[in-house]
Length: 339
Image 1 (tube, helix red, strand yellow):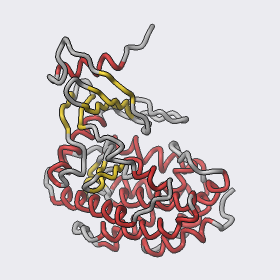
Image 2: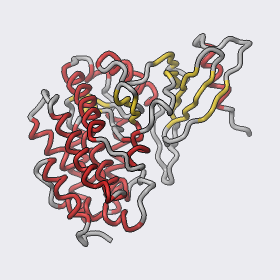
Image 3: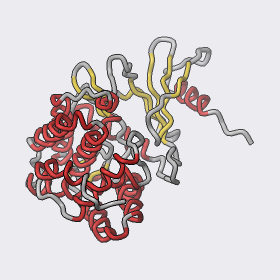
């Protein structure tokens, strides 16, 4: 039996939403770069939009199932974030909860390059990292102060399926000697509820627009631990310092600038307590990007071993502060703690 053409479903959605007339045609071009959703560039007769729909099975080597209701979660997050940081998230145009689809503005890549591509090309701008820290910090602070956020983003099961299970529990299976540490981190993360975490603050989900960074892909959004977002993004910068040793000092400075700018917005708890959870989580996330469900694709075998060594060393003996972790990262990677 032939599977239904997803393009037909997108065109029907556009017609229901009044974006496409019955006699009109829309050209759909699949967009790449993610593993969790169908994403289309849609050329309508009068404008270009982007349509997104969640996949039940994520496109990775290991089985990774997740609820398609996360499409609604992302829509809700975009609705929350737009008035807090206008211009720094895509504008939503239409949404169909039953179909699991929404349309948003299309941001052309020639004006909105992806931060990941810029970093891997050796273009490290500390000011960009500082702006990302400011953006994420403003969103965290606004959600912590919003009495409705805890109810609106009570998405613990979704976050567990998308982040705690594949990044912590699965990775723990590859490092049984660190199982107790991973179990503790999973328990602490799941039980911390302070602000809305985006859940995927990665350079691949950040566009560098003319007015500053634009944050995408909030399928994991969850009223939980905002430290996860900072640890997640710092981890990506540190891993790229292994890929690009000639830019390691710049990437370390970028990581520090991001953390410092974010810290200016921490008004929901002690900055010290927040930083402690960041330093505890980051090495586990580093190991997850090597041995978990969704490993990074751009490291060679030697670089993977270096990240694994750093993750294991810092997980077994956690840094006390973010600055200390950044200082210890490079030397930890050279230690013979992993195979």
